[in-house]
Length: 363
Picture 1 (cartoon, one colour):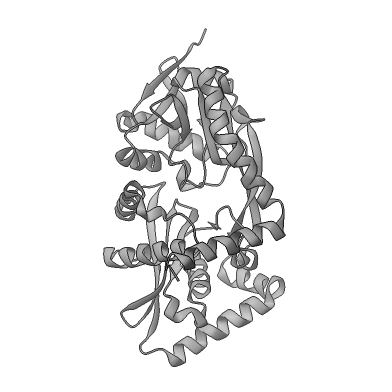
Picture 2: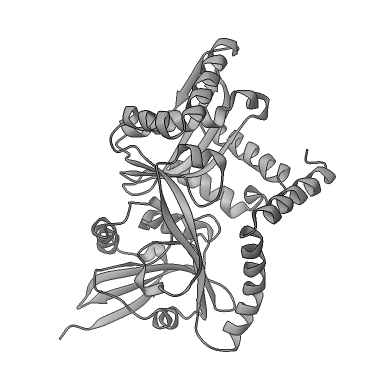
């Protein structure tokens, strides 16, 4: 009779066999090969978030499941890379379905919070409080087929973007060129500076003001592994970058993460031009899908060919600590959900954030 065992390890303590099984389970899952769900991402996060852990299920000594998480000082748990990870959840053999609260008890945490739970995570069914669309670009049939679809689906968007690209080529002081996988760290620093300024302009929290995120992005830019490699794509005029994007790729999926551009070139819509060139280059690199990530944006609506679904929520083990965590989390979540569900109110909230940014001198 087989017996299951759960052990808790630091991500860096996973054996080569365990890493191999993790990859195999992901390949057999039927889900898109999102790089955030690969062991390499969890190990990269652990280098900058030392309280990262992985619960490992084994049956008769053979690994059959993995659950990456971060454990707080007071026993609260979060998805690995919470706040920046665009796909989260457990990686389990088909048929292995432990109870959610049993998972938390095994991990020694009183709650587990997620904001981008992957679709098809049966262990956490019922724990989600909200669902969100994550737009995707399917380029599996090649870029020409994708552009043909845009001509039907978003004709004005495509026509305008291509016209601006041609105009940029005529008016730019230098050759317009695109690099899909730029290795120069100076270009990455430029992108992070643009993105920080964008966060401040729009009144949002600056992610790159957090050292762990900045360090994580830099390390992932250098990382080259089968399931999770950093990809920096840059649109240049001569030697000057005017738009850039940093994301993660697996063998078949490019997960879009941090796009931005030089505001001096805004009239040319360089960010949109960049995304079209990324889609074109992705097909040549063997990528079949670009995941644009959760969040409403006009450019995503224009570019997308379909959508995935991700979920936000939390699982709790009953008790005093769990109640405190719930009281801390739930009112804020409900307020955000209330605003998101009312477009007019959401627009006013965005304008209020912009006003605060202007008053702070960020415009």
